[in-house]
Length: 283
Image (tube, rainbow, N blue to C red):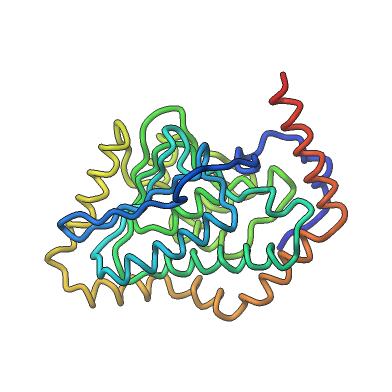
């Protein structure tokens, strides 16, 4: 799942802004439900919603809240003006506490299971960049509207010499064609808004965040006349293969991730990359 060869040589390449440490004050996730029963879940670990354990736990709780409130749909978006989510926080993997990093990974799995396999309708208002884990979150939703501009979206793990986990790949092949996904994954392609729209990685573009949210709501309300149970069961069948894979392989997936993170070469590579970021920031 996570081959180690070439990772050191590739570590200083431009990859995802995902791997910058950050801090944020206040709630990491805000959940607001409108009078039509549509929840808007906003990630607000500024500046770039880097996915650390605490943010993932807050998202997991928010997804449970959407179920408890019996919302008919949910929109996932960001409080950042230019970044939807920059992906996994590298500081969770650098010199890790192995108990914490295991919880981090299993929580990411849980968030994906709940989002990708939800009974309620899901849409992503992508108001900025969405590399790696940010792209995963967006693809896990049924519908994606991305704000126009010089923003990009994609799974670019191979640029760092890393193979994306199987369920990341399956989520992409569930979203775009097998051929387009293979090319994108092997080349670490980051799609522009126009390119993403062309291949079906996103469904619509929007002028701004408000427009993206409005288009997501319009999509959710399309199902008002569709029997909810029939819609939900159809969705579950369409997404069954990736969810079954996760159910059958969750422990193995976790163990492979822990072995990868704990490898000395990986830790050295992460250290080199962090130092490169610090040097870049100091210029």
